[in-house]
Length: 270
Image (cartoon, rainbow, N blue to C red):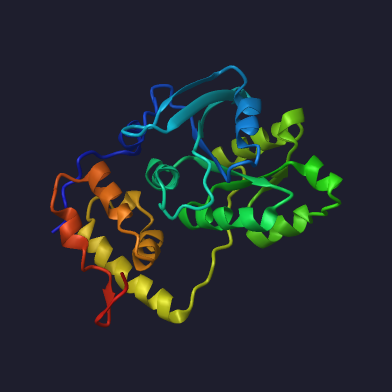
């Protein structure tokens, strides 16, 4: 028997993250490593149409802003700067939970063009969670000064997501970024990101766990990427079940019930 959902509907879920959905604006998440110019991108897109507060129950600052493009208004949520979504810190957990549960209509990942290899780790983690990902390749002027050449078309082809080069401090590329967001939200383009392929042993374990979770999470499984959730559980992430309980469930014994769920062929993967 499934667990009882505390609330239903994406709008109610978003309210848990202090998102005002009364205007029915598409929700756009802005993610990225620290020191990538993410705040400059945020300011460049939203201008003075922004405000700050705290994430619910956290001392971490939450910044929200709005921008208009082609007559449509969008709400931009600036997520804490993180190197991953593995929930090793409060900032990582906030970013992970927002992308996972608030299900933004598009997610922009800002990357430092001078340090692309390190930044792509977060990009690949985000594409495991959601299809509608845009890579904002910022600090292109710094890359040029360092004689770093980036094959933007090749990167787009490999990742299978839109890639927009920017120099946010000068406003370069921000119009194209807005246009890409607009096209994704309005389904003018459909994104199917590249996703990491794991070994057959891992994929088989994931599939078994997906079936187990589908039974446990009856009624709310449509709000959760079960493949991604299974990977996190196999990695030993116990905080994700706590987030699910806090957002969806009345059953306080949920975490205890799920402690032994990550087992396949008698092997406990946690």
